Each structure stands twice: as structure tokens, then as C-alpha cells.
Length: 240
Image 1 (cartoon, rainbow, N blue to C red):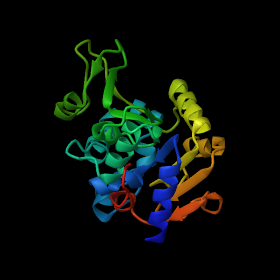
Image 2 (cartoon, helix red, strand yellow):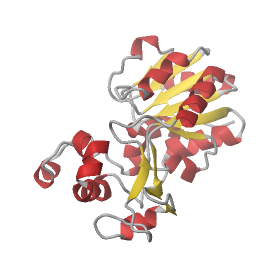
Image 3 (cartoon, rainbow, N blue to C red):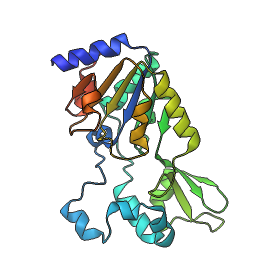
Image 4 (cartoon, one colour):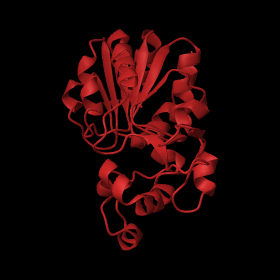
């Protein structure tokens, strides 16, 4: 409880908060971390998830890619939890300047956050690789096998696969927000996926807060370290 009070004080004192979020923020909304491999998963797929969601795998085996993608990476019924909601409230009150997320689920926007830098893209944006026509998530969900455009081209989710680079505009926007921030809250990420994890090094503000169940490479650098579920922590925070 003492650490929650400290977090409340830090958030109250800060005027330019930036949030950096990972899969641990969305697990409380019922979206599993795809890297966690259970028995059922092992029986259903012959390849590790990192291989399936690579650019080369998508290119040469789109059928299996989409089987995994639709089964393990799309959760249309997921709703924002208290972490998403309180982060959005802090932005609406003028306390937070944005959210930088590694998640592709769109839950920050669903909660009301406006300034969201989606480092790894979004399941809600899908484009034809031939004519670049846009398709929403419902089209992907309702398509059989590999989704195709009316022009005949294959539709690709606007998500960053392994072997692909981050979008430059999103990356530079995120760096700019981190440099402006007087408080950075890292939540629900173990900081092992690069180059996203390296963005933390751009922070020069007053308070670095880290909320995660497992250890990270930045634990010793944090001004406040809370090892707990992110939603449960933010549930106790009062947005002034």
C-alpha cells in the first residue's frame, strides 16, 4: 500500500506523464501473452510463435500464418481494464502526454486514449498488399483462410512482424514523447523486445516508474518499482 501512495504522489506531481506498455497490461483483459506456450498450443502448431509471425513465414505460408493469427492474436471481445481506463483519464485531465505501446489490440484507444504510439501496429488496420485498400478487423475475422481483397491481392494486417522494421513516424513520435516527459511509467513489459525496449534510454525526466510482475533490465534504475498486476495497481489510483 505504501508503494501505491508513492505512485499516487508521483502522478499528482507530474504534468507530462508518458506510459510505455506491454502485454502485461492486456492480460487482465483476457488477452494472453502469445509467447506463453501451453499444452493445447503445442499440439495445435508445429512451429514456435516467433517463427509463425515472421515476415518470411507470412510470405511463404500465409495459410498457417492466418490460422495462428486468427486463433491467438485476435480477441475482438476484449475490453479495456482499469490500467487502460486510468491512463486515458490522466490524458484527458492534461496530465499525460501519450501512451507508447507494444500491444496491437487497440484497447488504449477503446478506453479513450487519443495520443497512442502503436510500435507494433494494430489488428484493426489491414491493407491489401496489391492495391493498398483498407479493411477492418471484422473483414479479417469473417474471411475464410487467407483474406483476399476484391482486386485479388492478399490482405496483410498492419502489424510489425519479426524481420520487419518499426514505422519511422511512430518511432520518432514515441521518442519525442519520452524526451518531453517528466514521468515515465513502464507497465506490463519485461523489456526484452528490441528495438522497442531501447526507447527507455531516451527518458531524462524526474520519475521512472516500473510496474511488472517479473524482473526487467531497468529495475535498478527505477525510482519506484512495483511487482504487481498493472490493472490492480491503477484501480487504486485516483485521477485528480
